[in-house]
Image (cartoon, rainbow, N blue to C red):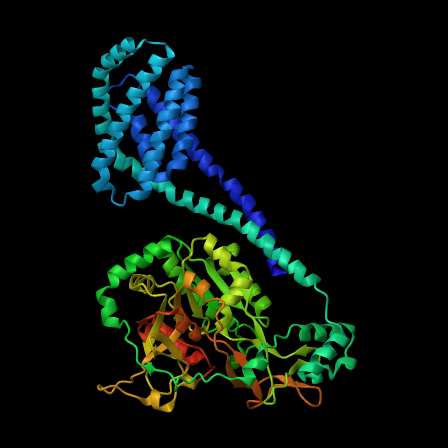
Length: 631
C-alpha cells in the first residue's frame, strides 16, 4: 500500500520538476539575449570577440547540450533581427554548434582551468580561423565563384582574419575565467534540478513496477483449510490449526494466510546446523588500518571519499527492522527518545550525523531504510511525521526484510496469536536480497551508485558515509571496508574481524571460543582485538556477484512471545525456543577482501542494547554529551 501511495507522490513531484525545467529554458533565453545585445551594441567596436568567449565559457561550464541549444537559438534569432542571409545562417548554425560541442567536451575533461587556459585560448583561435575559412568557402559557393575567383577572395580576406584571431586570443585569455565564475554561480542549482528531474522520471517506471507487483500480491488466492491441513500434516505442524474453529471469518483468513507465508527452510537448518564457531577453521588475527596510519593519509583519503560522494557513487542503507522491546517500548527501536530536556530520537541523531556529510559534500547521500513486518508502518509514519529528517519524501526508500518462523525446542512452530504464526525478522544478513526483491538495486544502478554503506540503527554515534572511510576503502582496492574498535575485554559483545584462511571473516561474540577470546599477543593485547561496529562499506558489483550464494543461518535461543496452553499470549521469563537469523557479518567472507578501519570508540561507538547498564541508553547519553550533543 505504501508503494502505491509513494508512486502517486512521485508522479506529483514529476509535474513539479517539469515546471522547474523552465529554469533551463529561461537560462538559455537570457544568455542568447545577452549575446545578441552585446553583439549589436559592440558591432562596430574592433578588438573584442565577445560572442566567441561567451559561447566558449558557457559551454565549458554548463555542458555541450546547453551550449548547442543556445547556439541554435542564437543563430536563428540573429537572422530575424539582422536580416536573413542563407550563408550566414548556415555558417552560424554549423560553427557555433561545433564550438559549443568542442568546449562542452573540454569542460568534462579539464581538471585545472588555469593550467589549461593556454590550450583553451589556442583552440579558440583555431576555431576563429575555421570560422573565417568557412565564411569564405560558403560565400564563394553561394555566389558561384570560379576556383580562381574563390582563391583570390580567400587571399583578400586574410588580412582581416589575423586581427580577429588576435582579438579572440586576448578576449579568451582575459575574460574566460571571470565568465566561467559567473556561470558557475548558476550551475549548481541548475544541475541539482536537472538531476532530480532525471531521477524522478526514471523512478516513475520503478514505482509502476512496484505497484503492479503489489496488486498481483494482493490478488493472490488464499490457502484453503484443506490445503493447510494437508501441508501441516506432512510437516508435523497441525497444532497451528488448534484454534481454527474458535476464530471468526476474518481470523480464519488471517491464520491461513499466515500459514501460507511460512518459508520452510528452517527445517533444513534445524536438521543440519552449521558449526559457526570457527574452531575447525584456519582462524588467525588480521592486520588492519590503525588510527595513526589513518591520520597520516587522512587528507588523501578524504579527498577521494568526497569526490566519490559528490559523484553519487555512495549510498547509505539503514538496517532498522528491530523493535524497542528491550528498551520498554512497543515500536521501532529507531523511534526511541534518548533526549533528556528535549526530544531526541535515535533516527534523528543518526540523520544529524549524515547531514554533516551532506552539507560538506553539497549533495544528499541516497538513503534506504530496511524495516520489518512488525515495524514497517510505524517506521514510515514516524519518518513522514518528522519530515524525513531533512530529506525529501522520494529520497528515502523503505523496504521490508524477510521473516522466519520461531519454533520451540522440538521444532514446532509457535503461534503468536490464535490467528497468526509467530514470525520474526530473519536477521540483518538478508538485507541485500530484500533490497533486490523490492526492486531497489535497479534504482541504485540508475543513480550510478557503486558503494553501499550499511549501518545499524542502535549506534547513535554512527558516522555514515564518512569521506575518510570511503576514501580509504576505495584506495585500498578491496570489496569491503569495515569500521572497527579495539575490544576492551575478552567477553565484550561485538563480533571479531579476523582471517579464515586467505579470506577475512567475522566471528560473532557468542560463537568465539573461550581460548580465542582470551588469546593475547606478545605485548599483552588481545590477539583478536578488532570488534566490528556494524558499519560496512560494500562494493555493489560484488554484492550482485555473490547474491545467489547462501550465507550461514544462526540458530539462536530467544524469549518468544507465544500462545500458551490456556490460549493466552504471553512472553516468557526465560528462553523458550529458537529463532533463525542470517547476519551481515557472514557477508564479509563472501566479499573476498576487506579493510579493517579503526575508529575512536568514544567518538563512533555508542550502542543501545539495553535501557540501563552496559551498552544502554544511559551509556549512550554520556557518550553523546562527551561529543557535544545537547540532550
